[in-house]
Picture 1 (cartoon, rainbow, N blue to C red):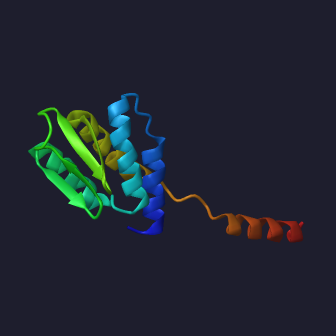
Picture 2 (cartoon, helix red, strand yellow):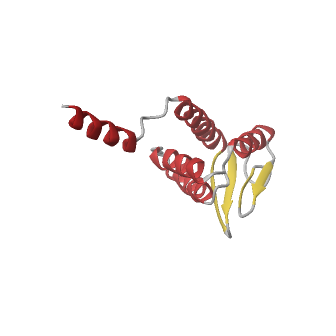
Length: 127
């Protein structure tokens, strides 16, 4: 993932407000994975697919595991730490993250600040 994509994903992950303490604990690991650049589009889809299948998926030092916990839970691990939370809750948050990132990417790019400053200088000279 590019630095800009990592920054966008990390910003969106951090902006999510999660009330459930167990889910918030799992989401902290999602945040750590986003900082490491491990949540590109294809990987987000793989994590969601693994939750849907009731299996697991991991990349580098981050992953999820469904078959080692209760039927409605998912284990999320980062490095040597692990948290357990709602399978449906984590799935919903990952899908919301994926959808929000797609929505933000589709927005028109803001004008570049350097260009506006140059235009202001030109207009001041023309006056």
